[in-house]
Image (cartoon, rainbow, N blue to C red; front, side):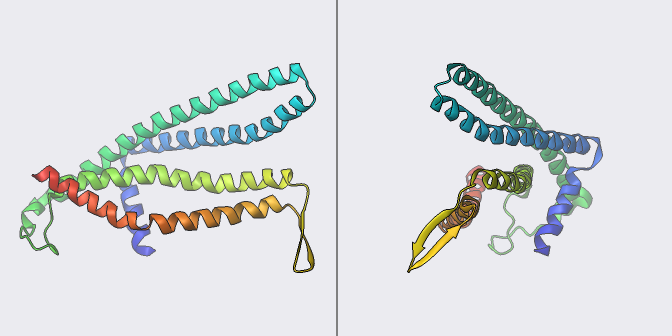
Length: 228
């Protein structure tokens, strides 16, 4: 774990250096705020669904028309927030990638360190096309960091938010008999959702585990194709 976090924060510190790095941080915060607004709209759509079907059940023409108009506004707002956030996030990735790439290339070239590279063909020590490797690794780091860190933060907030919503919606208990015992689970939707997520995530991890090795092989083949 230590081997992951120390290099991660060292690279992040490089991204945040100078005025451009701080502008990138402001862009990250702006994207985070837009994501929170998008989450609010998602939660509002849950309430909208209940209001809309209640209006249908009551055959309330005025209520149905109002809910349809509200749905259009919520959907348009959600789409607009997503597009703006995606655009700003792309600007952020370009900014931080430029800073990180230039900084690492300068450190690699200072004192003519590149002349000290071992240029043999042994797979254990050979460094293939280091300048392009630096550019590609910086791209991967910035892209993954800016998206996955934000996704992690939003996932934690979403879990808490949807937990509160599910707790309020699942006001009735699930009752059934098992081996002669009567079982009653209060707010069962709250407990069913995590079980479903754990099972789905475990299956996804099991099926996607080979992708790690395949991704490394893909990167190597891309670099070889560029060289030749």
